[in-house]
Length: 413
Image (cartoon, rainbow, N blue to C red; front, side):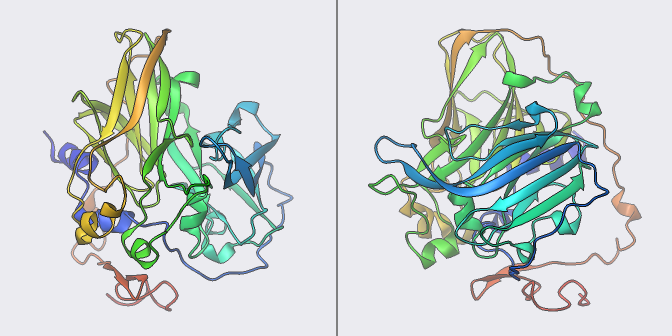
């Protein structure tokens, strides 16, 4: 096997301890330079193909039996564009799914109706700095921030979430998250599953009190340092972990780990391999058969699922398989406080093959073509820059500096 294929396989299967340190707690803290005067105006010379209102507000919805749960929710309203571009489910706390095509121009009017400041980050998207959702651009209750950008990304699975300093964690945990799916001409030629056969699978862990209200950082400083873990798994904003699919069909399952600190070692209960066709910002070059995948916080993976020969009545279970948490002995210090310790084995998703269906999609041998950069041509290949990430006094630092310190990236390394 070629070295490049091995490297990709290692990334999907194993990840690395060093990488896990960086991705385990992205929602506990973010950068800060709050401004209450970040309203921006609509550009007269920007003609959008898609114009959407995206409002963050506090609502109550029934999640568990008994009292409704107070959540924060993104709600969408289509002002212009294809009606299929905005898909919303009012029966859960998650935000809408946005379906966008590469090359389209998009205007999104983010309206903050929360009792605190917020801003929206488009995770994985190539957008101008002004529209990236940086913590310095937060807006207060009653204000609007207008995003205007052209979709530059290739086809893939992306998502959006808040990014205010120090409040990213609780705002995402309260419900503020949604998927953004990009397609392009290259992907459309592959005839991958579409519509009901293209299924988002958003994985989160949550914890509730006796009144059905969300509990977060209930151990205070320990949870802040080690990462908060819920004690039950939610799929697509619902607690039953059930996904009804059809026999005789093939599916594209788009997995997103939208948990705050938990990561997953996903594998089928019966040991069958996973067929991976995409990760994060793109399809792979070719499908990969994997015994399991590690899905870190905010990471995505697209899975091909073939149910053509699976009879009606079959139940498939996807588990998080056991692994060593390792990082700072987190399994002992942080995860063991949860009923679902990090690294333990537990079911994540049950697929119920409950009726007969059919489609004609077949798994392509080749998926995406990449124009690869040759590392030997890098101008600094003999003197690469080194970045050391470390938590110091409860703040993440890069090479010993916080983001607020001037010259962080300009300092000679």
